[in-house]
Amino acid sequence: MDTFWRVLLLQDYNTRLVVIGTVLLGIAAGSVGSLLLLRKRALVGDVISHATLPGVGVAFLLMVMMGGTGRWSIGLLLGAAIAGVLAAALVLLIKRTTMLRDDAAMAIVMSAAFGLGIALLGVIQDLPNGNQAGLESIIYGKTASMVQADAIGIGIAAIIVILISAALYKEFRLLCFDDHFAGSQGWPVTTLDLALLLLGTAVTVIGLQAVGLILVLAFLIIPAAAARYWTDRLVIMMVISSLLGAASAWFGVTISALVPRMPAGAVIVLSASAIFMLSLVLGSRRGLLVRLIRARGIRHRTNRQHILRAIWECEETSGKVCRGDLLKRRRWTQREVDRLLRKARSRGEIESAHGEEVVLTETGQEAAQVVVRNHRLWELFLIRHADIAPTHVDRDADEIEHVLGVELVQELEAALGPEGSLPSSPHVLGEASP
Image 1: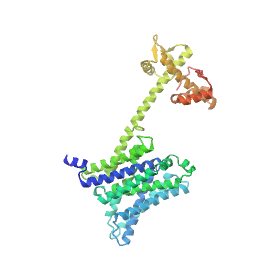
Image 2: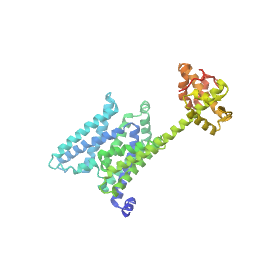
Image 3: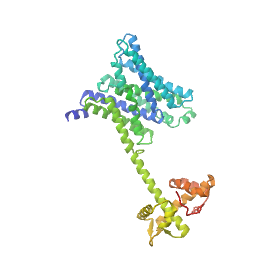
Image 4: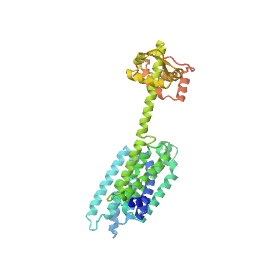
């Protein structure tokens, strides 16, 4: 327990250093990752991370040729940054000068860059001083052995990335949601695209020291993907993504410090993945649980409107409504009709008069009239303006009547001119609906 509290309260210098560095990286990765995700450039991070491998290899060989050991971290990161920028620019060049789509251009550049990197690593292994200790820290990350200079460098770079993202927020927002409109208004779309890719490259390069080039993509994209389940607003998504990135870093480092032989980089990514799974299920905007609740609500509202319309139309044709008449209106079973009638009675919309007869209350009549009116307005619109036959229009109208808003109903009334009255059905009532 003493070790647990020491790690949790950041009493150890090394743990505190690693947490601060990775949390700042998580905030930067979350903000930039949100923009890349909405710009549909999520795989660009993968391209950049794979392209850093040949960049590191070339930088290592150049430093060895100049008489050095090839293990200078700044030189290796500089080579990774240059290679990442070139890869991102090459993806844009292929996309704009060929008929290939984004995914094809990214796949080509990523495969070629990674193949070149593997070939360079083979060359480096054959060198007399080709000890790859310096390269392994770039490829797999060295979170647990981070020193003060590494943390300061990550922190400064992360703060710069965050400030640039905030300064260009308006431009990036328009680029992500409507680049064609931005271009028509004279905005430098290509320059903004390149700036966004440069930010992604910066986060990727500074993330090499924390999680390595193999896992940095997950750190860049997973928090943003998780944030998407909580909001529809970009600025809130960037904030949530940054917080989730920071939380992933903190959880990962803490677990790695508590559990022996647990690599911090891998645990950070696993923490981010766990947060994503929770967001996938519990997200307040697009989570599975919320979607199930909404679908259940829509289904209940649809069934309520169906039973009210069926009762109203039965009254129009025969003057009274029996349970057997409702069975003929739709493909319902007796059990379903009984359940729908029980719910309608609990809402005060129907009352049972004599035996099998069903009678609408005043509240039920008002609700049923609204449903029938919307249904018939849409039927008339489809017949007059969509050229759909009256014998088929009931099925098509049945799909849309449940989502007609007040403004759309007013537009239909203005176009069809029913003058506030309930239109008569354009087809024979009594036919079973699907």
